[in-house]
Length: 200
Image 1 (cartoon, rainbow, N blue to C red):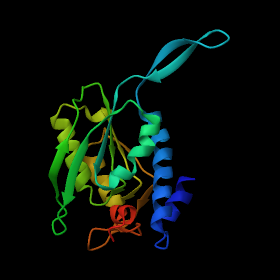
Image 2 (image 1 turned 135 degrees about the vertical axis):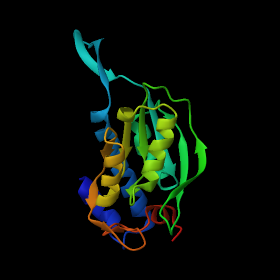
Image 3 (image 1 turned 180 degrees about the horizontal axis):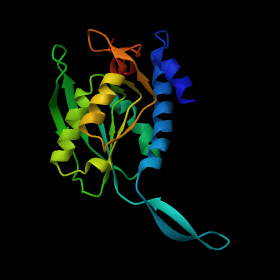
Image 4 (image 1 turned 90 degrees about the vertical axis):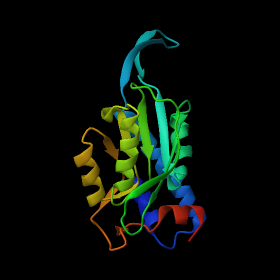
């Protein structure tokens, strides 16, 4: 189903309403998938019949969408992680150098034991992702407690993050083969934020 939804996002003829609906559905599916990668612990509960063993998430959850495109993913993730704390990172990529520059940061207090989920629908050069992880690590977040969730990535960007931060868990729907001269993912889906927010 994820690939069916991704195909709708890729289609240049998908209108803004359909694009938004599809992006939110896909984020919801990815949020459910993230749960498989989070630390859990055994607990005891009582069903209407008897006492039994169960599991629950072990750590507090912190969601960090990278502005602005990742705001589209936040509602889907909050349906799974209702009690999560939320922080925001504003990172703007220089179109000439592809280097990500921080222009906004508003993060909650993050404990070393917290599970931190970074949201960014696209990983192109990997520069934005690397900068976000660097900021979190500087705050004391353990690399193995970070999950980076995206919808579509370039092979180049994924490899760059894996090489620098091998313990970070990467979850995505599709890895595309290359970047063009403007550092856009090919075949990609264009600019995710512009298509979601209607700023084409």
